[in-house]
Length: 115
Image (cartoon, one colour):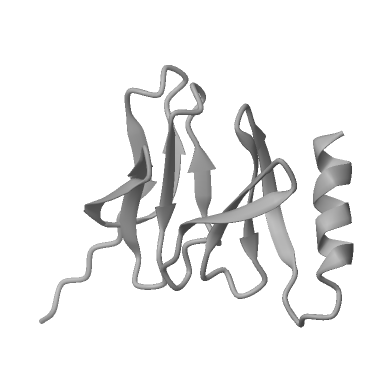
């Protein structure tokens, strides 16, 4: 049912050049990114709401198993946590993933040493 709702919203907005991708279902609705991966949207009651807007934030976002948090990285490989409509930066990294109890997050960290 919620997947059909997302498809309907995309068809309504067909006149614009944007589309939505990477959908993930949670209790609050459907979280998806735009085709530029520059914003995360929550589709609730047929109304899309921007919940994060940072270049690249839609590429690698993960909803925690308890559905209270969203982790994502931007196009500068910085990890962010979205908690109750507030965003906190954790630091450098990419591809976040949650532990099964939503208490820990793991992500890829690449370190460069200059010689």
